[in-house]
Image 1 (tube, rainbow, N blue to C red):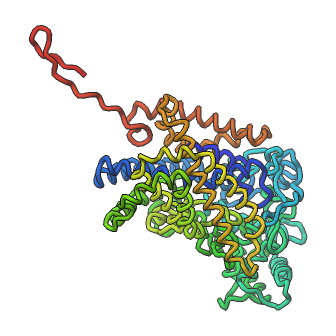
Image 2 (cartoon, helix red, strand yellow):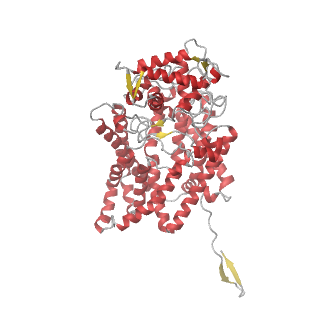
Image 3 (cartoon, rainbow, N blue to C red):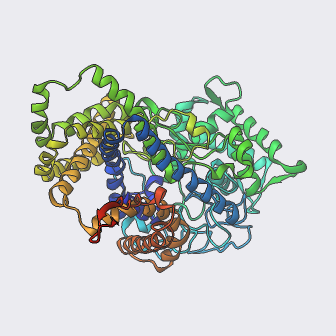
Length: 638
């Protein structure tokens, strides 16, 4: 969990832009590497300790303690954060409109507080000036903020996704007013490209001209029609990032280049479905123009002759489905709308009925891992029972092989193999890297009723950890080979990144399916060996209890609960204006989180009933024992 503080300090401090394109700098590289093994290793360790609790308490008490300790803490956190969001007008998401602004708006020309020029809303923020081409590697779009190349951070709380929302107001929740959704990006794109007379309005004629222009750019084969796959793959070529969220010019050509490529693939399928009026799987020029014309009629308030940026954004968000986070689609799958797609922050009718206008504040957010852990801790019991009935691994020969298998990395290798098919169903932000958890932004209570496609991947680690408890007498073998395991894991990760950047975008290759398996295979190999390597490292050098280790174990949960909101809402928005190097900003942010979390833990958790949920269980006083007194009476000791 504590490693998550570093990861999120990097992510929200600037590394988040890696998933919007651009060649990653050292901060983003470090962030992606940590992400590749952090949560898999967490579930590996969790499986071990859950089995230990099960062995100690039995099924009934084990389940009660897991669901009470974790479930109650999760619900309290969600309601507290939602309440704060309601009071502040924000959302529990790092995403908000560039530069903040009133609900439903993004700041730009014609909106209050717009500041042209470098550092303002009309241009990339920060002392680094323009973003410029950077010679990105294959599979990595060109054009990145200076921060991604180790340069100065964009200045101002609202200059980066994950910022504090800027002077205009706090960040908005995903899918909520002004939040991250189709309208936030596409509204600015359409206004920028369609506004021929620069009046910050779009007329019906200008919108029709844009439809004609876009179709011509997308129809590179000059066939007069586009399939869904063609549209999604090429939509990045006409895409533009809003001011402050990408390089000048934004998008890239079909198939690669620019943050527009990533976001084009994310939004493209929804735009295609909305324009394909006859639902025949192809889009004609006249069909696209008719769709744009229909939109204008629906969005023009009271028969207005033009559409403002706000009207465009609101109309697009209403007309288009929420985007999917995931790698490119095609034969590789896992792309927008595919098995690896991640629904991004959209409230449901049930959530609306339960929570009203607060519905979009109720998503798992950083508490996703607790829900996953509750599911795994429960599901492990029938799996364990079935394994016992089948007498799997019950032979003397198998037990004698366990130390040898742990010492030579065979267990890590088996974990990599069995988790490979499951990992291929997870959504990645780019290439074949490990994406975010699929349940992270789904509405409550819907998320509690849905199967998540990344459960099998993380559950495989949990089950191996559960099995490791049965082999606990041989755990010392992991400590003997910690260094070779880390070397193999890191080497596999470097190879996986290079391989993914070279081939993941080449979805038209004849052997793409095999390339995809190989790419995911390298990443699974890396994650499994890094997890076992770090376990071995701590087993070898930190297997004796210390006061610091005990304190970190006691406070880790509380640290994790506080850190994300502190980073997003308080700490990073105040550090960014100083333009610190990424490593200094990250280190300072983590230090501040640690100090705040430690102080609040001592004040509000350790000596209060909240320690039952967020801290170590209180120590029980020893029972009083009757001792004969010196004068023949009875006294008590203890």
